[in-house]
Image (cartoon, rainbow, N blue to C red; front, side):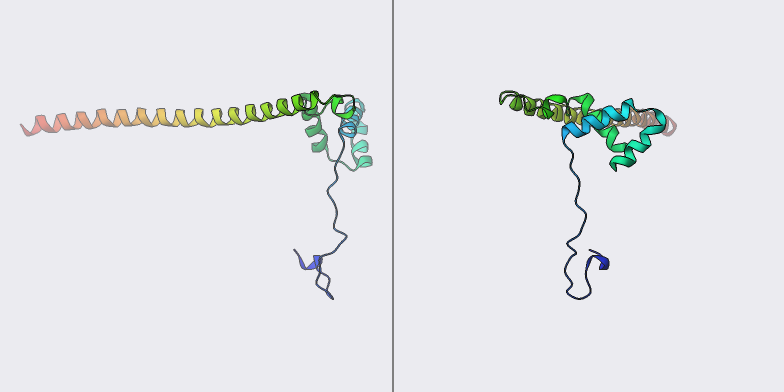
Length: 139
């Protein structure tokens, strides 16, 4: 907390702190569609008008492509049976992403281990050659 956040008289936090905005799925989809259909020069105007950043639109577009953000979430026509399926699907996507990250990490570790084993093998062979040449010189 900064000094600016504290009032000089009663030393309490300010009540007028900005709140994080939340957006509905319908709003996100509408903005992504408007942004994608806008001519090149008007995309910035759309972002300024809505008070958004381009990175938000990119994130929402990615969510739409992966199925995290779709029209079935906006319409209340989904049945109770679909909601657990969507939650399960989302959980499976997260698990898949976690496993892919773990697989990438382990693949890199395996490559490092194989390279280290190759170096150790060459070092062992070199030490054997040095040992044999030292034995032959001493005899």
